[in-house]
Length: 204
Image (tube, rainbow, N blue to C red; front, side):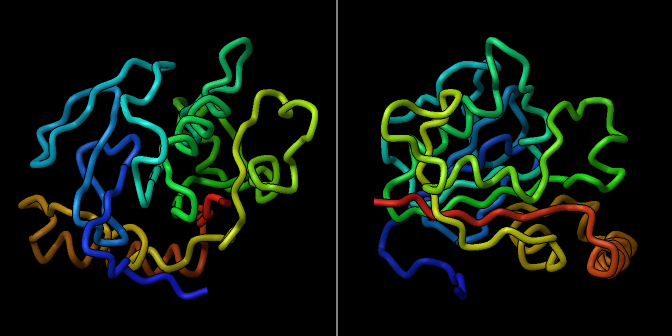
């Protein structure tokens, strides 16, 4: 399935855990960002506390994204933040909407080397959030999502999904040195992919 920017007149995108570089990979008309701290972005950030509900109504967004966020969400009981925010992002996404998740994937060393990484995700983890895992009696371990998988693969096209999707370039990124660095990094990651990308769609 080829994914292109939506041609609808008005679309909304939520970038969850936006950091200092909000991303809008589908070129939605409106970009909304959420993070646990405020950043000096041109797009105002909705600041939330870890474990708090997203401040949006059900089915608000056409697209959502989370770049290098899932690996920071703890699975520890009783507040499994990984499941909680997968549920929350699913809640605010409209049926038929698209979600993009990018994260360092097991068993690559980058999944473990950062001491703030507390959630180790494999290629099979997505199965728990798709319609294959929907229970008729009760949700499995509180998982309420009902996605279908468009893509679940190692991320090689960094220019398409990461670098080109940054909405705002800093002065540093405009330098020749920075551009050369990004080109080298893109080539290296294409040959030795360390991240995985999930592209999911919310079932009707």
